[in-house]
Image 1 (spheres, rainbow, N blue to C red):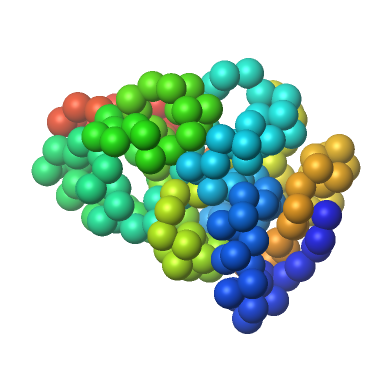
Image 2 (image 1 turned 45 degrees about the vertical axis):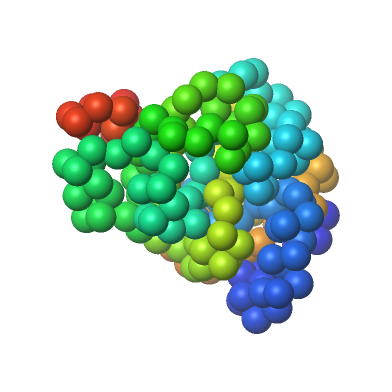
Length: 192
């Protein structure tokens, strides 16, 4: 496990983008909590995320590289699109129906046709935008355990299994994102 600051990663972004493309597992900052992730189209990398979290088949969300990506791959109503435009980037996750489920590894959404999508208001999001592909985002914890807003709160067992830990001094809310079911024209709050 290599521990680096977000400033270092952004300064040497070409190197770290190549590492992300190679399927490396990262702990990284978001606007809410530290996230655990990898490129969402790598079956092997996504399986590692599930192993690290000791997670059952419960789906994980992704950071979308752009709103355009959401509109291209999600079946979004105009009303939902307006809400996405208004709230993202920000601490919100939208579960949308996918037009092209094959663009992500089957484990991400348990082989279903929906996907949780968010765009955090965080500098790490810049890397995902440059990467141009969705990036898994799930809280850094063993499934069922508390989430983390500092590296010191992360289970050492998890730290030992990741490739990179990206630290930041950016503030995080400490509360998971609000989750909306956006599979129909009417948004339903699933978690606030």
